[in-house]
Image (tube, rainbow, N blue to C red; front, side, top):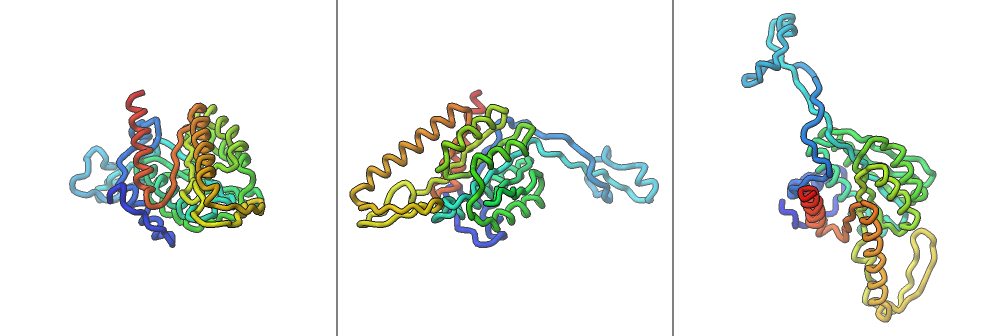
Length: 293
């Protein structure tokens, strides 16, 4: 599947898993900065010998007890761990952002797990309770992780600052922490993001700022309602459309600049139709920086 192919809106867990795997298949770039190969090799289980098995892995004692050849099976532990931190505030429930959030998180988790790493996700409910899908590795874990993403309901989280604090408490060892948000609460979030980066985490800001939010529609007067505060404002869209677009882009550029200065990586995802292309470009830039470091 080409990385520029259209990503369809997933409806069910199986659809989301299919989209994530096929989108990830078109992306050929590493995700985390410390691309140490391998990991700890640990004994998993015994199974009957198969022609072609390495003779050094035969369990001779076990074979003698059972009168049949047994082979030791080993697994390689994850080399890196990543936590996907999901902003579930009401503004994230607008337009195509829920589908964009679920799909982007599922694709990145797929890339992590398929390169031998471990991944999980975190969401904080309006009551302040955390929903955590634990950080683990393996194909079976991917299915459950994606199923959980497909069932997510964005009903408004606790404060985003608390969300980042919770992420920091959960990840004591160095990890990749990917924060999926529209960053409308950026002033409250920036200290938490900087603190995570200062503790040695590889922090990535995944900015879900869609086309529909960057400019007003070409209509006459319209009433706009803040999804989180209920505040209402009436605007003559055609008269202020250009000014609004300029102000939003200026805010986005300033946010990106401030985060990068703090050692935080940044990618904007504006739409589902270019998700694969945007992610691939971002990951290749990360890979190029690491190669030149």
